[in-house]
Image (cartoon, rainbow, N blue to C red):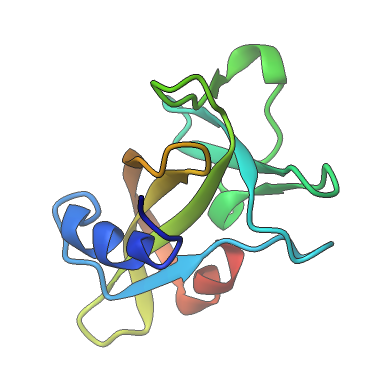
Length: 134
């Protein structure tokens, strides 16, 4: 069984849109500090939202496409049947490390420990403040 810390190495191994990962942030709810989430996303819009299982707070990862209706998004689920995950966002930084080039969303199933890659995308003209929006 894996631990939440295993997501850091896993995210680095996966990369983001062809770039090496420079920074990994384990996701934590700003409202309650929880680390278990549901993950919804819209691959076409390059947007993902995490839904806290502790307080039901929501957060769009890296301020993606903003709000999107639940009926237009994909809900991440594990092969074991669970949809409860620890999440991490890996960031590929620019050459001077003052911009974000790309990001990748990775997951760890809370039930079975399986590590997974959800999606990655290029981030145009984003500063490093994006690192705090995992």
